[in-house]
Each structure stands twice: as C-alpha cells, then as structure tokens.
Image 1 (spheres, rainbow, N blue to C red):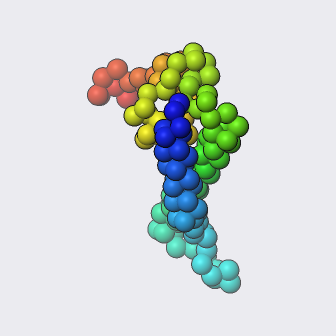
Image 2 (image 1 turned 180 degrees about the horizontal axis):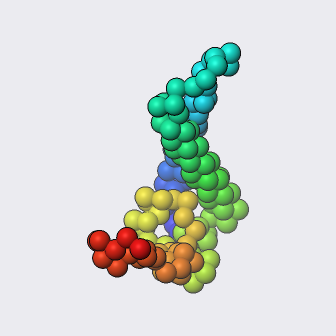
Image 3 (image 1 turned 90 degrees about the vertical axis):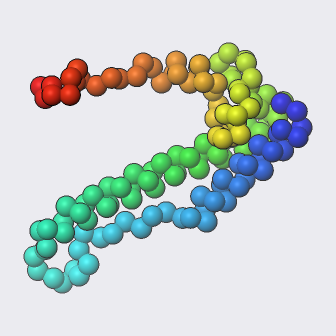
Length: 130
C-alpha cells in the first residue's frame, strides 16, 4: 500500500475510534427503578428486558469493533507495507472495502471461506412451520 493510502487508512481508523469513544456505551436500564418498591409492573417487564438485551448486544458489537480498530492501527504501525494485503492469499484487499471498513484483515473471498456457507434456514416454504 502506498504512503498516501496508508495515511488515509490511519486517518479513517482514528476517526472511527474517536466516534465510538464519543458516543460511549448505551445505558442499560435497570429492571427496577425503585429498589424499595414491592412487586413489578408485569406489562413493562418484557419491554425492559428487550431494551436491556438490545443495549447489551449493541455495546458488545461496539466493543468488538473497537478491538478490530485498535488491532488495525497496531498492524498499520508495525508493518505499513503489508497493510491492505490479505494474510491468507497475499492479494491486495479491494480499495473500496478498505475505504468502508479499514479494520478488515481478509479479502472478500478469504472472509467468505472463513465464515463458511450461508445458512438458508430450515423452512422451505412460506407456510412450512415444522
């Protein structure tokens, strides 16, 4: 990867990192707002649990993305010449892919091979509920 492309990737990675840090984690609402209250609102409980699950999952995904960004910055610092090359096949990663996700390690073909075949699900027809 040439020097201007490396610097663009570094700039984009730092922007993504700053954006994630600025947004912070989503707050997970407690199940009960008043610890002294007896009983709960049974209608609100499923909504609260769903909100907690969504916030927790989003925080986990954001944490994983931050880890990938930090790892990409470390790769960029340690070996800028090989940044943008797939470690599996040694082919250059597409410029558009690196522009959108500068933290990726693998090219599309190697990523698909690593992910495995896509699952089509168990249903064959719209009305197949078995």
